[in-house]
Length: 71
Image (cartoon, rainbow, N blue to C red; front, side, top):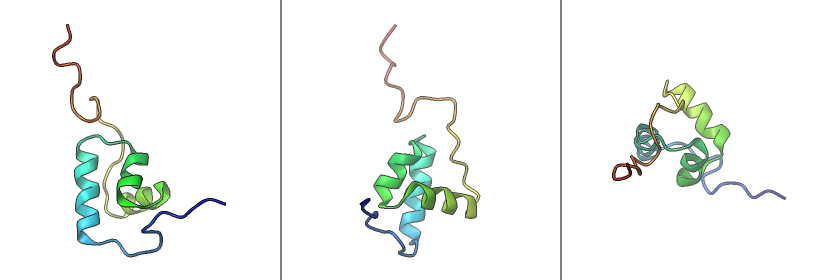
C-alpha cells in the first residue's frame, strides 16, 4: 500500500507556494519539489498549472553549475 505524502489533501499555504516558486526557479526536478513540499507530483503539477507556473526545465544544470571548475 502506497503511503500518502504528509500534506496530502491539506490546503496550500502562501509559504508552500513561495517554496515551490523558489525550487522551480532553481530548476529543481518536479519529483524533488513534491518531496520537499510533502505533496504528490500530480498535486504539484496541478497547483503549478493553476498558478501559471512552468515546470519545464530551463536549459541549465539543476542545483547550479557543478562543472564551473572543470575544463
